[in-house]
Length: 238
Image (cartoon, rainbow, N blue to C red; front, top):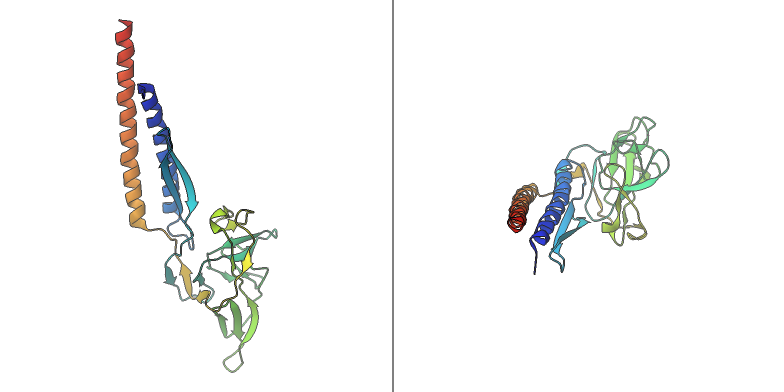
C-alpha cells in the first residue's frame, strides 16, 4: 500500500524528471536558428515502482534546407557529418556548412576550424563550385577550364546517436558511435544551401506547455499530500 510519504516522494521525483526534460526543450529552443543542429529528445517512462525516469537521445533526422545564395555555404543532403579540424589539430564533426574563406586562404567554419584537414582556395578566381560528391573546383577566368582544388569529405558513424557534444555545433567521436566511415556518393552536398535545425517549433511549444501543466499538477499533489500528512500527525498527537 502506498503511503502519503511515498506519494510525496513520487511527486517530487516526477517534478525533477520533468524539470530535466524542460532543460532539453529549452536547449532545443535556444538552437532553433543554429545551422544543422540536432535536437535532443527526452523519452520518459515509469519504472516498476511508479517513479518517472527518462533517457535523452539525439534526433539525427534531417533538417529542412534553406537557400542562401552564398557559394561557400553547403548543406548535407544525407545522413553523415563533415570532419573539421581545430587550430589545435583536434578533429570533430559538423553538419553546419556555413563556411568561408579564412584570412590565410583556407576554407574554414565560422569559428575558424579547417574544413577537413585543409583546402586552400586560390585568390582572384572567377568561379568557385562545390559538387554533389564534395569536389571543389574553381575557374580562374571565363575562358579557363575548371580545375579541382580539393574535396569536402563526408563520413558516417554506425551509431551516430552515441556521438558526444563537442565544440559549438560540432560532435565528438566515441567508441560507442563506431569508426568514421568515408561516404563515396555523388549526391551528398548542395551548394548555396544550409541545413536548418531539425526542430518542429510547434511540437516544442506544445511540449513546453504540457511540461508546465504536468509540473504544476505534481507540485500541487505534493502540497496536498504534505498537508494531509501534517494533519494526520497533529491528530495523532492530540
